[in-house]
Length: 240
Ligand code: ADP
Ligand code: MG
Image (cartoon, rainbow, N blue to C red; front, side, top):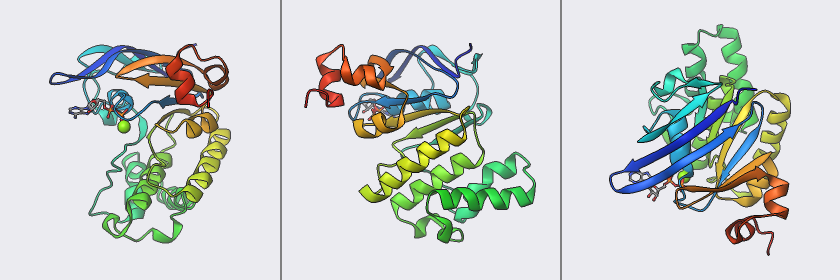
């Protein structure tokens, strides 16, 4: 079967910095993959290469078997939440969330109902008419998540979507994301996090990164119980 996502030898350089070094990785349709690793290990760069926000200096990226390396971000059909939750500052929350739906010519009544649904899902139903600048960072990030979910993408990319939330809300959001996964079994999720607890709670498989490289990838159980490196054992906490 064709993989939903494939990185084939993808490298990214910023000047002399190697941000991503020859990444080979596939994600099956409907799978949730956690891209896990410490800060600076290349996780966001991998996601950006997939989303089209940075150009690989080598290698190719594929979505559903199609080489999308040369396609601009908006032609890749992805739902994306980046770390810096860039909302349109001049648009109210509901208009931010509706933006992608309107661009896809979704009927108005459906736009209204879906916007309400996803805002409720992220606990932002009461903030629909606010502007981004009137929200905290965590609230903006939740709106960004709602915006990505609204278009019901085949592949959803989330870069540390819970990092700005407090612990209680984070628990709620993990539960919501699990529910979402069950409701959308065909949606492929690539979830970037530095938090092994989040990765273990949410993912089918973990791809562990270190120093711009993939250390190992496998089912959560496998990395947790039978790590093939000291780094994996330490990072997943199995040795603790
Ligand atoms: P992570 O998301 O795992 O924290 P990143 O992918 O953001 O890591 O970064 C990987 C490496 O690439 C780091 O050394 C980082 O400093 C560097 N890097 C990332 N983005 C840029 C950029 N735009 N310009 C220069 N260096 C960058
Ligand atoms: Mg990052």
